[in-house]
Image (cartoon, rainbow, N blue to C red; front, side, top):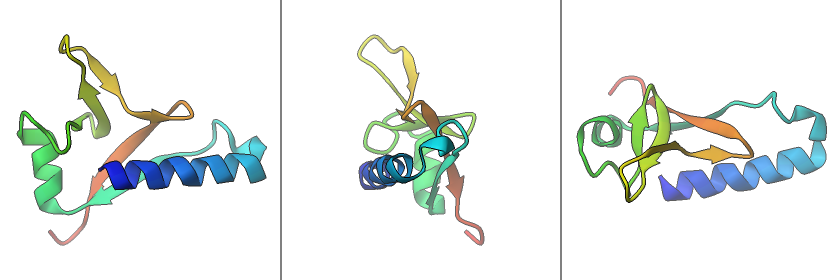
Length: 84
């Protein structure tokens, strides 16, 4: 998830630099395989500390409070690859 997150972060940075009017009009998605998707929703440790809530990527902090992972204020949807 970390590599995908940093790739999206860089893409969003470049997009907003070239197309500033796209701010607030952009959706972010990460596609993952069935095994990783299952870990994100079922494993208490998640995947690299990340979990899913309502299909959106996030994490629990030290006090067990939930936080959505965001890039430039946009939440990240995780989609399971089809055919898995």
